[in-house]
Amino acid sequence: MGKLLIILFSSPMQFQNTDTVYEFAKAAAEEGHEVMVFCDVDAVYNLVASQILPNQKTPAKKFAELINKGVHFLACRESARLRGIDSKRALIKGAIESSLGELALLMDQSDRVIAFSI
Picture 1: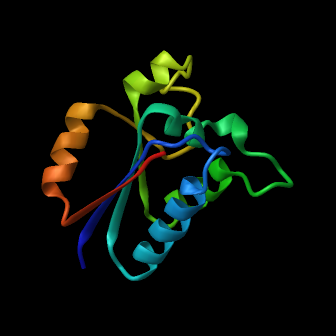
Picture 2: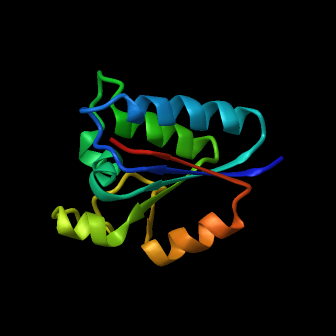
């Protein structure tokens, strides 16, 4: 199976992109593809652990479920820092701190790259 890189630029609640990325990544992983989701700019808010609420299916909760199913989630360190998010402490369990340099490498190593923006 192939390596899929999804780049998400959108914040959690303003656009349909977050739900689309969730469904797309879930389907690709279920088909046996290796899936990585890189969250840049406002998309880093999707990975903030405090956004997981007990009785709601928030984007952070959905993404945490995908992490448990083997999908890799990466957060741009600089985007998080510029938004006041401590990427070493505030992200959901399993989310990986990353950089734009690493994103460039991932793009080169992936079979397909798809981006979701506004």
